[in-house]
Amino acid sequence: MYPLRRNRRLRTSEAMRSLVRETAITPNDFIAPLFVVEGKNKKEEIASMPNYFRFSLDLLEKEVKELRSLGIKSVLLFVKVPDNLKDNAGTEALNADGLMQRAIKTVKNVVPEMLVMTDVALDPYSAYGHDGVIVDGKVINDDTTAILAEMGLSHAKAGADILAPSDMMDGRIFEMRSLLEDEGFHETGIMSYSAKYASAFYGPFRDALDSAPVDAENIPKDKKTYQMDPANREEAVKETLMDIEEGADIVMVKPGLCYLDIVRDIRNAVDVPVAVYQVSGEYAMIKAAAEKGWLDHDAVVLEQLTAIKRAGASVIASYFAKDAVKLIS
Ligand code: PBG
Image (cartoon, rainbow, N blue to C red; front, top):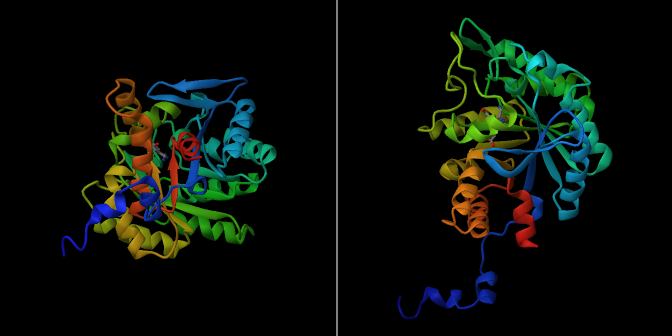
């Protein structure tokens, strides 16, 4: 075909390149994760996540207003639970006046149009740092899903728009959807972490919430009996299709960059929006390399987010949401 066809003709200028560009990230794509802590006037930097913070509710208000002014329309809330409120069953998760429930109301109060998504999982509330109830050294599935459904309902009652179960128990979407319907919360959505891998990239997040599995006798050392094996591809599609059958409105792949083959498989297999979570370890790696002057921070951020979207994500949860939106505006 050469020289009739020369691919470089379409790369000759920025105007030409932008004319034929296949993928663009926009503020509409992003979910900004937010970490919330008890207290007043607190903005605590997370050691392994430079320039990312835990906010007390008063400062959360400012942050949410800033996000809105940048054009970000969704937030995903996580709470750091004081140690004295943690137990095996995550009892505090159901407290109607707990930190999460107050955080939901705070966001809705200050920016009513902001979509409020909430993490539904026991680990920040678990004395053992697990996403489920532990009996005899095992995470018990069905006891856990019953609690998760109640937890989701509690968030819905506080005003959450979308519940985001991140636990990977079997059947939790069905339990949660059924309870929401029974209680009249027909419009509350579920974004399921459907293909969530047992990844080493969650380390900084567990620092942020002090939620890592504890090192104790008869407590599982890791989350491999519920989160997926990073070696598996076909299983991700099965997991995701089951969550859709159970009632998930949006499905998610997590982490991002190492799992873009999974994102594309799922995009091709489902008819619901696909979300990707670019996780804490992915954030930390870019920050660390940029601090050393080894990578161009802004360029790498935009390249990774574009790659996530190109792979098939229509929703991206990212600690770079704010940075990215500033860079593209
Ligand atoms: C809790 C949860 C985790 C993340 C989101 N929800 C950690 C885990 O499963 O251990 C990780 C997010 C990140 O690393 O940015 N179930």
